[in-house]
Length: 244
Image 1: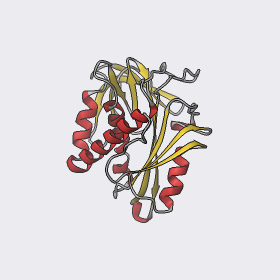
Image 2: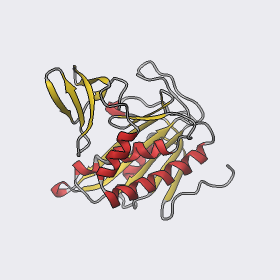
Image 3: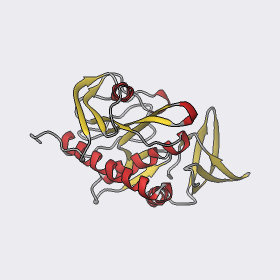
Image 4: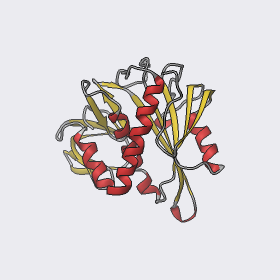
């Protein structure tokens, strides 16, 4: 793609060749007053990170972006944006490939992990969110295979520029839907692309492990499990099994 990537109306692209972390750069811009829809895109990251502080391999060839969002809500509601972002990534995948979302915000394509999503928020007085930085990395040209990865990598194919256009367009649409219809619609769409209800899963909670059957999401996005000791609601953890 020879022409600059086209973003949704009103969105702004900050294009870099290299950066430590697109999330850090987007947070700096957000604190300086940059509006929603400011997208930091870098060809590579030298200090990319994923959930729980994990290293995110970020050489040239894949898509690394962080988008400033200003949802004007409290922190619990802002957490819903992780599901919004996962659906936007899933929207990028061609129809001839199998896509599945995994709680809380992973996206698998043909059984391999295609993206990393990291949301970081700034919260002001009264618990209102000042901004959310939605960091999204998508494997485009190649799929890193790292020892610590629980799933093999998968890649989208095509060009990074085309992937950037697809991602920002999908994210804009999914954000508009979240604002218009609320989390109930997001939850329904997410569950339609998640693992089957009743699938056996393990969830890591700190040093412990909880085993059960996937029973869906509650209205706040918490994972629901049917365990041998009864129903369980999990707000934060790492799902290790095949389902959502």
